[in-house]
Image 1 (spheres, rainbow, N blue to C red):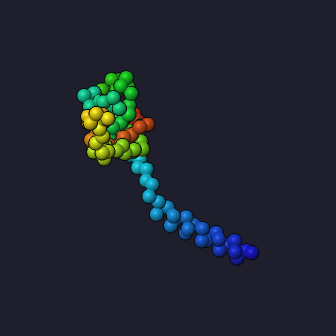
Image 2: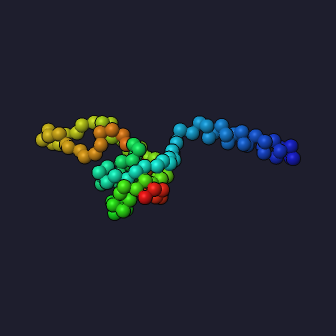
Image 3: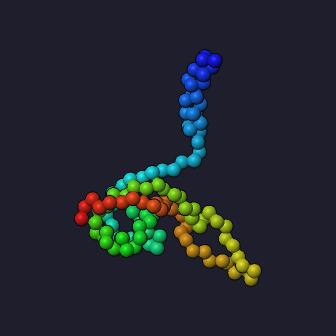
Length: 116
């Protein structure tokens, strides 16, 4: 009985490692520094270092011109190019709003001012 328990304890970490290496789900956490410029703001947040960072506009106004450090988890939002064109019952093309390319979003960022 002791040998069985000892064997299971030695083998279980190896099984756990092999499963984590095969995992296809990947959530990337990023950290970077950027200077806030309100002209890069959108209704979704602000473009910083290739990411759309969801920071409320009121906070962005206070941060304008300052350098911040941003930390967060990246979510990829599929662009309109990946969706086929659709038509209504009259044959008119349905106009969709959004970005054409996939975009990297940081929905719940943590940020702090590092330079005034």
